[in-house]
Image 1 (tube, rainbow over the protein chains, first blue to last red):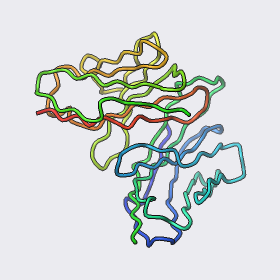
Image 2: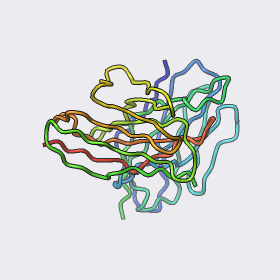
Image 3: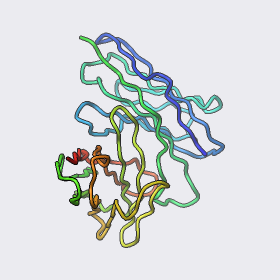
Length: 119
Length: 115
């Protein structure tokens, strides 16, 4: 069974600083996706970034980037130039892929990291 | 694109009554929707996987007779909490996938309070 571990329950940084959230996972699968979702105080879950395991290049989305280390099973999220609106719970998630593009694939979720951006 | 609408956003009901929560995919067809429950300061707990036109698949420990899920069309899934009790008070979130390996898109959640 797959597991996802986020070892930082809470982090806080000053606005404009860079912060890195850690995520490790355990799987014997070779084909999978990894995600970072953000849940602000409104509690709306928002996709931040996605990484396909078969891609060596780290995914980036504007100020958000990941450091994907497949051998180490590590998938950290870096937020550059942090903004007050980045304050949220951040969840790391794993989804294994099968031979068929079936939409039933479930996400395995980490416990989350509460990120606070201070003005 | 890929908007998921969930209604109501919050509901208060009396113990013993039933509550229905709707989840709609507004601009895409979702053959599969997922229902989650989230306790305060915790991660998402998958309750069930809902497939259009067939019975939902419930996770272990989730009472299918208490949490009735219906996925009658490609754009609508409903979760009915039957004979609600205070311990059912929680935040319920639905999500849907465009298909294949696409990411999940989430509704804005429903806060249920049972008095």
